[in-house]
Length: 606
Image 1 (tube, helix red, strand yellow):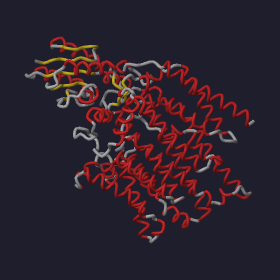
Image 2: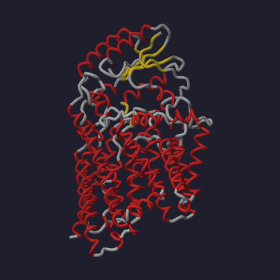
Image 3: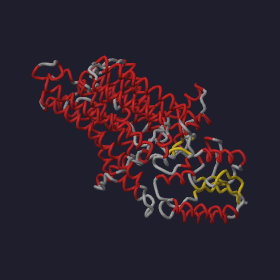
Image 4: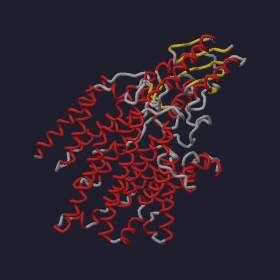
C-alpha cells in the first residue's frame, strides 16, 4: 500500500511540474484596461494550469496519509510547485508594478544614482536593504531591471521564504508526529498574503524574519558562538530592512530581558545575545532620526501607533475591510462576484488563524497536563520566542480588530510567528512523556495530536485552489499598469520638456518619469483626480476643464487603464461611458500631442 502511494505521489508531482512548465510557456498576456470581471485573469489561464493544480493538490493529500515521509528533494519539488502555481498569473501582466510602485522605484534609484535614500520617497528611510539587494542582483545577473523587479524577485523571495520554513520544520525532526505536514503541505496557503507580493521592503524581510525565529529557538538549545553570530546578522539585516519588524523584535527582546531580570533568572538571559540587537536597532534608527524621539515617533506612526490608539479608544470593527470595499464608491454598488470572492478571502484568512491557534492551544494543554502549569509557564517565560510570539499575537488582535493595517501584514506576521512557536513547542518534545516513547498509556494522546494535525492539514490543503481564486480575483486593480500606459510615459520622457509641470488623471506618472523610464530629477506633478467615490467622475472632469484653462505651458497626462479595470469590482459602466464621452469632447478642443487609445493620451497646454 505504501509503495502504491509513493508511486502515485511521485507520478502526480511529475504531472504537476510538467503542466507547470507548459503553463508558463502558454500563459497569455493581458491588458489591464480590458479587465471587466473578477474572474477575468482566472478565465484566461490555460486549462492545463488547472490540471496541474489538481495534480498538486492530490499529491499533497496523498502525502498527508502516507505512512512514510517522502525524500527531501520530493518535498522541495512540491513546495516550489505550490509557490509557482500560486504566483504564475503574475506572468500575465506585462508590466507587473504594484499601485504603490514607489517601492520598486527605490531599486531604480539605487541603479540610477548609486544611493538608497531620497526625501521624496514616502516610506521610512531606514528600510534600505531590499533596494541594495535587488540592485546588486540585477547588476550581477545582467537581467532586465523591469522584468526582475516586477516578476522575478517577488517569486524568488516567496520561494526563499517557503523553503526556509520547510527547512525549519524538518530540522526539528517532528515529521513522525505529522507536525511537518502542517508547515510543508499547505505551506504557501498557510503563510500567503491576501494580495500579490511585490519587490519591496516588506516582502524582502519576511524570509529573514523566519530565519531569525529559527535561530532564536536553536540558540536557546545550543548556545554556540557561530549561532550567536548568525543571530546578530539576521537581527541586523531586519533592522536595515523593515522598521516594524525591527521594532517588534526590539520590544520582544527588551520585555524578555526586563521580566527575566525582575524574576532574577539572569542565568537564562544570555545578556549579550539579548541586548546587542536592541543596541543595533537604537543606533541605526537613532542615527537616521538625528537622535530625535519626535522624528522616530513619526517614522512608526503610519500603522503601529494609530492601531494602538484606536484599540485603546475601543474603535473596534473586525469587518472594517469589508465595509470599506463595499462603500468605496458610495452609492455605486459592488458587483456580486467580487463581493463573494472578497467574503471567501476573509473566510480563508480567519480559518487559517483559527486552525493555527487551535493546534497551539492543544499543544500547550498537553504541556500543562504533563509538566504542570507552573513549570511550563516558567519554562516558556525564559524563551525569547515566547515574547516575540506574544507581541505578534497582541498586534494581530489590534490590527485585526481595528482594521488599521493591511490584511496581508496581519496574516503574515502572525502566521510566521505561529510557525516559530509551533517549532519551539516541538523542541520541548523531549520533556514530554507523551512524545518521548510510544508507551501504551501514551498512545491515545499521540494519536489524538496526530489526528488533529492531520485534519488541520487537510483543511489547509483544500484551500489551495480557493486561495488562487481569491488571490487573483480581488487584486485586479491593485496590480500592474497596462503596457499602453508604460508607452505613454516613455513617449513623454523622450519628447517632453522636463521643465514643464504635469497635471495627471489616473496613477501619478512621477515615479516612471523620475526613476523607471527616465531620470527627471525635478518633475512637477499635480493630480486632477476627483475624490474617490461616486463623485469622482464629475470632479475629475471639472479639474480637467480647470487645468485646460490655466495660462502657462504644462502637460495634461491622462491614463485611465486602472480606472477601466475597476469595472471588475464595481458597476461603473454607465458613469465610465459618460465620463469617456465628456473627456473625448475636451480632447477634441485641446492640443493633443499623444494618444494611443481612449485610456492614454497627453495634452499640451501652451
